[in-house]
Image (tube, rainbow, N blue to C red; front, top):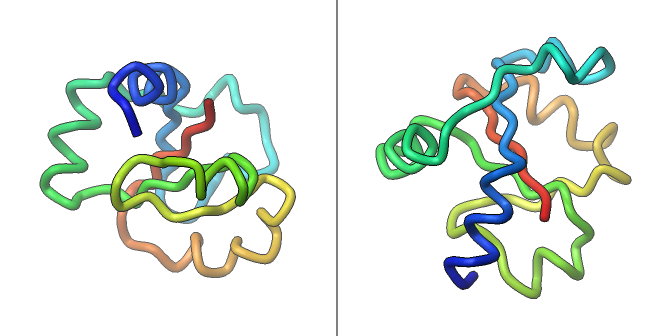
Amino acid sequence: MKSTPLRAALVALLVIAPGLAHAAGDLSTVPRISLADFKAQNDQDKVLVIDTRSVESYRGGHIPGAISVPLSAWAEHLPRLKATRKPIVAYCA
């Protein structure tokens, strides 16, 4: 992914605490993360990064290490996401 799309994607970052407490609730209460904090945590493998775009968009380019969890398939991935011990960073662009 080129740096410009990466920056655009990271503007939309959301951090969702383990357990996905906000999965079905008001997203205005979901904590946000700065680009600098994201880079530091991602470099240290302290977050699980999920790309919520379509599989086709994911295949076209994504943040290295991100996994594809399209919003249309959120329910099927929920048990796996709830089981993670890392904070989850979700993005779309």
